[in-house]
Amino acid sequence: DPKIIQKPKYLVAVTGSEKILICEQYLGHNAMYWYRQSAKKPLEFMFSYSYQKLMDNQTASSRFQPQSSKKNHLDLQITALKPDDSATYFCASSQDGTFYAEQFFGPGTRLTVL
Amino acid sequence: TQTVSQSDAHVTVFEGDSVELRCNYSYGGSIYLSWYIQHHGRGLQFLLKYYSGNPVVQGVNGFEAEFSKSDSSFHLRKASVHWSDSAVYFCAVSASSGSWQLIFGSGTQLTVMP
Image: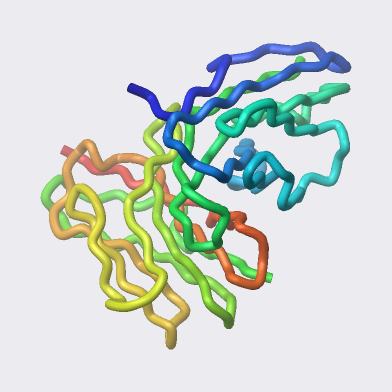
């Protein structure tokens, strides 16, 4: 059974619209993360959360807003979508928020912005 | 600032060959190193990690990696590859002085020919 669920698997959006990417983990972990992988750049860290609190934000734009309604959820809201936002977005989690904690990744949501 | 360099974008070998995928990092403090594998269209799967202790670490599916502080390297090796090992391999580093983010290299595409 998948331990980290990301929904949807594929997402197509038009420029200027808003989308929410869903992430749920069933590993009992306390820390969650978002990463982005695009054709132009390697895997990039976006956010880290620990016990539902934002710990680090490496995104330059406020259009990206993580939302944690439950300890095992970390959704990603993206507003005013641009074609450059097209990428695969990976959610990850770790037992706790230490730099040496093994991070487990979900299958990703592939976002295409037209 | 931590950086990770994977000098080989593509490596092609034959089934049964040994392989070494190179990873060099730049950082002077306490670090955590790991390798992930990504099969086409899939998420990242953890292979192995190093934080302290024995510099040679064993991972899943016969992979091992060796940490060298003097060379700032964490190369991944496998003695005998199988066609199913064809994938992209990512080296990642996390540092104690930064956030919990994993900083990834650009990846090495390993192709195993039958």
